[in-house]
Image (tube, rainbow, N blue to C red):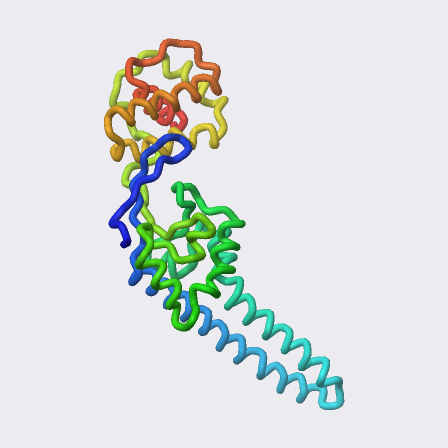
Length: 256
C-alpha cells in the first residue's frame, strides 16, 4: 500500500521526508510525454516525406534509392530516439525529470534521497518494457499500487523512487544574521573563501531542511557539518555555543 510519505537519512545525516508520486500524477506525466513523443513523430513524418518528393522532382534521374535510404535512416533514428531514448536521456541529464515530470512536479531520485545516477536511469528505463506488459502498463500499475513507496518494477530493481518535487521553502543562505557572531566576520570571510562549493553543499542542505528535524537530530547533524567545515577551512578560533550559529555565519559570509 502506497505511503503518504516516507523518511530517508541522507549521507549528511539529514532526516528527509519525501512524498511518493501517486498513480494519477505519474500517468499525467506519461500522457504529457506521450503527446510530445507522438507530436514530434508526426512532425518528423511531415518533414521527411515531402523531402522525398522534392528530391525526386529536383533530380528525377538521380539515385532515388540512395535518397530514400538516407531519409528512411533519419526517420528511424528520430523515432527510435523519441520512443527509446527520450525519457532515458532527459532523466539522466535533467536531474531525474522529463518534460512531463517537470510539468506535473515530480522527479526520479535514488531511494536514499540523493539525485539519480546514469546507471540507475538506464536500468529503470530498460525495465519499462516489462512494466508495460501484458498491455496498458498493467505490471507497472500493480507494482506502484502495491509498493509502499510507489515503485514500479524498474524502480525497485534500479533503487529509485518517483517523488513530488519539493522546492526549498527557505533560501540556500541566510539573508541576515539572527545571532550575534562570536568572532570577527572579516577573519571568518578569509577562511570561508578557502571552501569549494561542494564543501558547502551539506551546510546548504541542512539550512534548507533544518526545520524538518527534531531538536536532538538537528543539533547532531549541525555539529557534524561544523566539524567538517572548520577542518576544511582551517578554522582555529572559538566556535559558538550552538553549531547552527556557525553554519549560519559561514553561509551568510559566503553569500556576501
